[in-house]
Length: 245
Image (tube, rainbow, N blue to C red):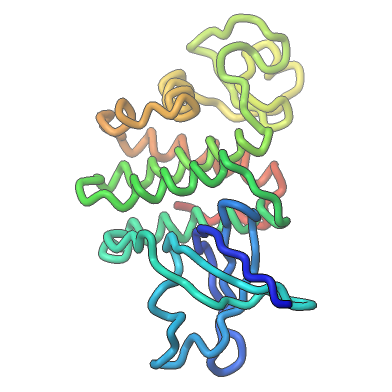
């Protein structure tokens, strides 16, 4: 007897398979990451194509075969249409998808990751989101995502000696997993210079204070600093590659 599985899923990747098939990479609420085959979904008259697409939140039904999962039914919950109307938003969505794909490999459900994905794409989909805050949204996702995975950076005290930090002499050390003081930096020569304002932004991100973050004017130097520290930590944690946002 065939068993049908039904869940909600966020589609973060898709690939063409043969002439009319597609394989969707989906992070599901109940099963974690799955790869599911949409047979003949590229045909115009396919009943499946009207319910699932990249960067969509969908209700999906599938069966488990010997080697693969196959879609049997789909229905959109949220298409996040505004993301596709803005090039910058779409680029950020692609970058988030890339990070997610690099770190999440197995089938294991995680409520915190699920909630973060839905929350971030709901925010990214907002019409009034400014261009500089689109960039900020990537970093908001990245730091909260790696924190859920167990890589929460130390931002309150020196990650090496645990002493109180001097706000004028701060360095971010990938190896130590957070901000280190001047003394520890010069002892180990490991880290990049980071301003106290950038550390404050990172703290707000990890507290998920988006209402506050969305009101901050993000200057170019702040964007550059966030990109540098995020990119450095991403590469250190073993991602395949880092592409500038």
